[in-house]
Length: 368
Ligand code: G6P
Image (cartoon, rainbow, N blue to C red; front, side, top):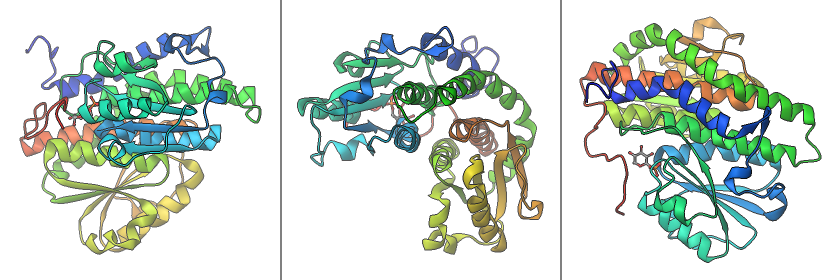
């Protein structure tokens, strides 16, 4: 096992650091002459014409990748997107027909609820596109189309590199959809493609740069009972994933909220020294997020802001700062996953928990 960890203390840390390479593999598979090429997936060249709506269904971390995708696909492609956890979707008689594109996302390709949701949508006539990390899985076999995530084997129960490739696969799908839209310029498609290609190198730098600062914060977080994550739009979905990572391996209660919802309840729990992680990667709505950060700071919260390196803000409201390289607002959010994963990892390390095999959890949930 030591050999398999290649010098890392845990598979999770190894897998965090593999992300630039695993992301590159996915991109190489789906790019041809510098352009997105999804021919291998089985998607039609102008697939947007074939559907009236998209359903994205998954569990856990995979669900969080879909939650992010909904914001982007609806905004740019102007097609209605529903995203739901599989265990709810499958028991509520969803409205599906032969003009529904069902996207199922699953690292293992074997999650029982996700597979059942796939079968349900298919029986109602949907075309199914799977985003999965296992080509030999039940989900891959039973789908009509497939984007193979190519993250490589993921051993740690807490998913890291598979999530990054799920989000990137949605970015690829987004750009391919943008190409089909008359109201979107070719220039924007080219820019988004080149931003996508920059991601692996940005992620590599970020995972080296942010370590020391994160270890300091993690040291503090290990003593806490509750930690809140806030964000808006795609950043909210990163907040969901950051909170999940933290709770599953450190056993500290962590919750994510859309930043604007805080005042509708959770603010009551924010008191002296409660950590609040504010995700502010989106320049377009940064001011709104920052006003929420100030609200929690005024109530004594210990704030960590994760934002772009050239972002301006009032420094006295921010206790800790992690800077991200500048990227377009739709793709910048993914960069925050690196500090969030490292934060969960080092906090759990300080708590002395079994990072790769957290209690009560399984890598793949093949029973209901
Ligand atoms: C389990 C794992 C999670 C994963 C979820 C969905 O709960 O512990 O890390 O996100 O299943 O798994 P899947 O293989 O369908 O992505």
